Length: 60
Image (cartoon, one colour):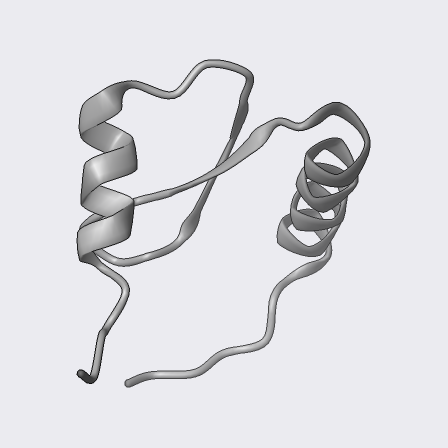
């Protein structure tokens, strides 16, 4: 995995999204291909929820 620090714009956008998630119950969206931050939204489709759940590793 290639790590690089967030630039100023990415950092501000992520902080804004985290605040919106905490205060307004907005979902934080991620790009499925590279797991980059992709914004926030109030409405999330069922497919996006299922994909997010499937992407969490489970060790049972």
